[in-house]
Image (cartoon, rainbow, N blue to C red; front, side):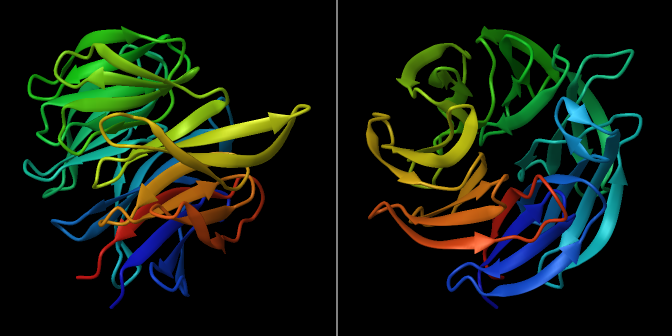
Length: 321
């Protein structure tokens, strides 16, 4: 059985499974509308998919959903559906393998701000909720030791810092707005997409320690196993979307190694466990660009079928058992 790349088609609504090495299309699994993000749990060997809206996208949707679908990625079948009601619009996910906890960001309700639902992965049940003080925490990441969480907010002018042990928000880091986020492999820092570029936070204090300027609009951020920082730049010319760019920054120094052209509207990035390949989904082209990170060259462009717009969204790399 090969390593597998799983790709959400938001409007599909599906997950397409590719051989991660030769990019052969292996299977397509239908999901409820409208899936957004994926997360692989290597301990239980399960794949989680957030079902976020009935249609549309953040800020322009036809209704909010409230499910997380649980998938067996080897048999490529749905094995369970977690109903997070009354919470709705689940999106970003992070996993604490040691404690068996799945964190899922959710949008505000009439009576409470947006927050993070804590799910026990053994029982597949929600056991707690952490308010983040913002309408729509979009992405959520946690440090490898499971003590700190960071929720980025598309609307609120801050990043929410959460104590995951005490399960409460402990700080707000002032930014104009924030998009993707990723912890460094050593857990010491968290990289946040915050115009005009990237903001690096100390994972313990939450304080900014470094800035990386990127002139375009950066949405997804990812750190590889070797610590390289990958950022996806959305680009426009004369008001129209044009091919985006993958920015590759060196571990530690955050110096720019180079850029690679990708599809329109980069939205999600992941990488192979050895840190040699990057995979970037472009939601408006419904493609996944496969990049050799050593040579900074495009190896392949995968196409994901869609029923309309948007298309390719969440990604997960699934090592062979």
